[in-house]
Length: 369
Image (tube, rainbow, N blue to C red; front, top):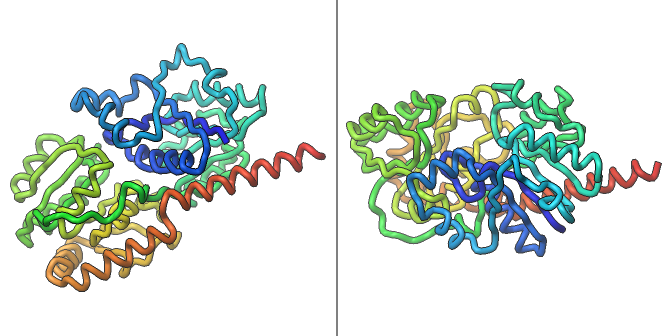
């Protein structure tokens, strides 16, 4: 089949975690013999920030992912008919411009020749519902939501005809255990952002590292001067942005990692861990997580990773994992097993193809009547 995907960015993962999953899905679709066309805005904020700091990032991405490419477009001059020519399945991510979402829906209403999905991987449906309600989704077949709580919001508000849960997952062609000489105890890969988890970073990262006197490093972007000062005062080395496809090599150099979810997910969207835990577990590194509710039974907490209810438990768990090789090995092996059996991008592509087939069958049945 021919897939057409409109995303905020495929090339840039600068404060844009959705690129991680899209790369894995697109690669898997190509591997299965499908054609994939991906479009992203030329002036997207993520790509703009990335290229300003790392001018060679575009070429480095294309070297790392030789099977997939992104076409840059300007909204005012986009030839939608050419972009959608011959499409069987079109996926439009929720960070796209409202006007583009509407235009694609209008084109589908006139042509009715492809399946059309809206892809939601953010908390705005709960924290800023007016922004989602403003999208014109009347001609979309439904939404692909990366958690059941988001799926249920779309259903309850009747924003779309149908909604499915489509979890994120690890791209196991990129994220797998690597060997490397250990250079530190713990690494955290994440962005400081806009205050959605600054208190949690202090409680679950900065304080434990300081009290256990660990050798630690942080990778990410959007760290203000006060945050950098806090890291430095605790002896945590800040290393800036790292391309996501280099993260497995980073994990190989440390003995453990942690997960600190953003506050909107822990409070309003239970069951959604975001993609970072999937990727860490796929790399076979012991993981200790700050609280979030695994209400959808994605993992086996206590086996795949350890939950820390507060800073004291994070200190205890980190100390245990770093001093007990058997505990560290068991956690890493269990987490890796769960990813390989349930949460690889290959599983999600199979889910997507089943959804597409089901929508097609329903459409055919309705047409027969």
